[in-house]
Length: 157
Image 1 (cartoon, rainbow, N blue to C red):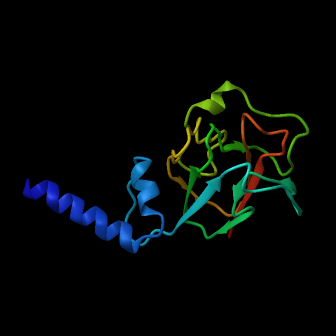
Image 2 (image 1 turned 180 degrees about the vertical axis):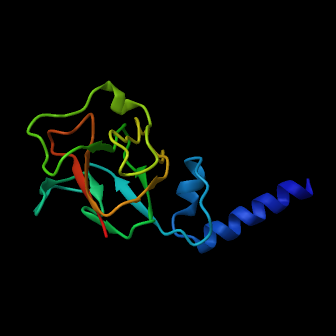
C-alpha cells in the first residue's frame, strides 16, 4: 500500500512539474525529469485550415509546431471521432493521401523513424511519445481526413 501511495505521489509531482506529463503518462510513456513535452491538439473542428510556408495545414494545434532537439511530441485527440497523426516522407505534401492501413497502428518512437504513426487515436486518447531526435521539418497528416486537409508540420531546431 505504501509503495502504491509513493508511486501515485511521484506521478502527481511529475505531472505538476512537467507540462503535459499526464498525456505522456496516459500514453504509456515514461520520460526522464526535465524533458520538454509539446502536446499537439488533434481536432479538425477546432483547428481550421491555415495557409503558410508548408501549404494548407489544419486539424492540429499548434501548427506548425516548433521544438528543440530532444523535445517529445504527444498527440491528443480532443474530438469525438478517430484521427491519426502519421509521418510523411519528403519535403512537400503529396496531392493524394500517402497512407496505407499501416497508419492505423502506432509505430515509431522518434520523428526521424520512417513511417511513424500515432495509430488510430480514439476520442480522448493520446499517442505514444515521439522524440524530436534530429533537426529538420517533419510533415504528417491524418489517415482519415488527409484531403480536408488535415495536415501538420513539426520544425525541429
